[in-house]
Image 1 (cartoon, rainbow, N blue to C red):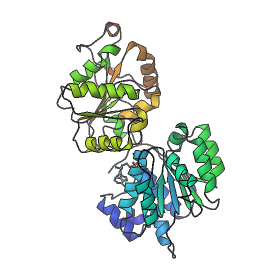
Image 2: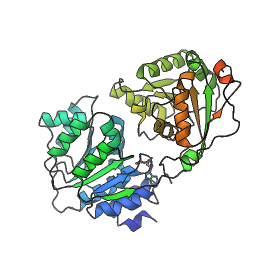
Image 3: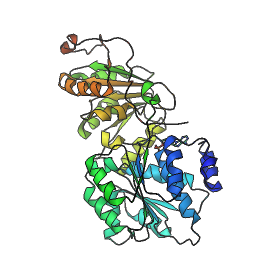
Image 4: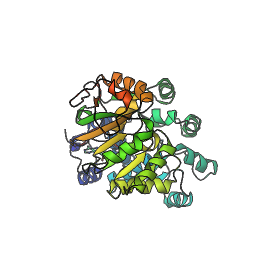
Length: 400
Ligand code: AMP
């Protein structure tokens, strides 16, 4: 199916064409017509499935179709992280560049002044993280009384990250008479409860994630002592095929230490985590995307939902505590039909985490033996040769 069949207005179609979007992704072909018809949506989709355009395109169109056009926040998109707010803002700007709709993003970690100035210039769509939005509401700089469409993006993550009180207050400041769009990768009880209260006769949109991305990822595992992890990382980075490497650290402190060690050894690296200033986070991400730095070291929170192209390798310096994060992390490589590699380090303490990841994925990950930092405890572990495949688990990711 082509976008043109979805009754999208020419101004937006033209912009989508310039983005080289020819065919809508699953979530787009399902959600766009439903949203255009005014339905509330309970969408189950992860970042990477084309979800942003699935709500941005119909929102831009619905707001463009109103006859009388006065500025004021008519659509509010709540999202958990600053980077996602910026990413969504950029999507609105791109898809809406031939419409008269103006979008503004507000998020914490940076001065409020430029955001205030942007709001004063006029806004139709506001993309916000909850904390900064609450600040601006408390200062009476923002009013939500004209909001017609409310979107909660990454709802499970958002509620997970302790925003629940802010989110409830924000929702109660938006008129009851509105259209509500709710996107969440999973539906834990808290999300289902909030969804049940705020959505009216929602239409459920489920995207069955395609398996392509994960099947294209070559996964391997290195057993290692904790004290040798950084040395092992340096050893692996001698491989020049590792052009662009995203390293996951469990802690912010750990991420900083990894970066220090890499830089000491002449490898360009930056960290991205919750304690970094927003400016530093943006610089790190854009330098990494542009290929100015070879390694980006991230914690799960900072890396969530980021859309990074051309990532050759993901390294789990520490295995994630939550098994699902493993699939989300490795799904950042192997995109757009490219072959990606995911390498995980595992200490004897992390074997429990490995077992639950393998249980979740329904397979075992290839263990690399004979490397210079192979610990004694690994000698007793079973070695499996060959390429690991994830058959029954997938992450939603769709690109043309
Ligand atoms: P999202 O899930 O919104 O973060 O989108 C993931 C990636 O898919 C982004 O890089 C988008 O630019 C891209 N994308 C979204 N929709 C399409 C489409 N219909 N065709 C091609 N690429 C798309």
